[in-house]
Length: 125
Image 1 (cartoon, rainbow, N blue to C red):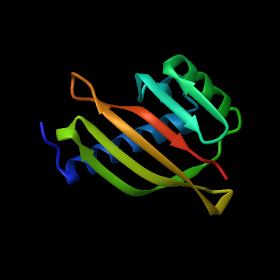
Image 2 (image 1 turned 180 degrees about the vertical axis):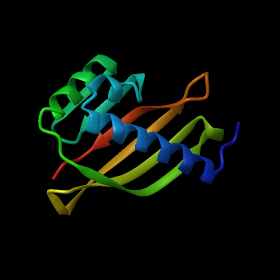
Image 3 (image 1 turned 135 degrees about the horizontal axis):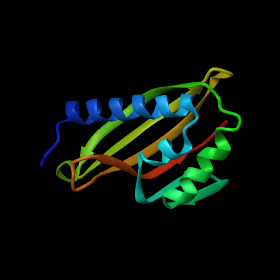
């Protein structure tokens, strides 16, 4: 089923808001739940986590010293008749406001219509 640009942006905004709530709560398992079972999480040039268990461990480690951030969306576009949403933006960390950190994600629609991250790459300052 095709997905409009506006629908894709609404979906991603809701997902990112919910993700931020889990981040603030320190919920690594909850953060991993935003990912597809075959997802990959890549910190450019540093590490890769494949699958929900590794992604949860990566977040558990990150949450030991969490940084507050806000997101700036640069691109959100549906693809393949709504099967995927491609999303790109930057993290702006409160402690490093002059060093935005880029990220890019691909979301895959599941059989129940939910969108889960299947590919996530980011680069920290």
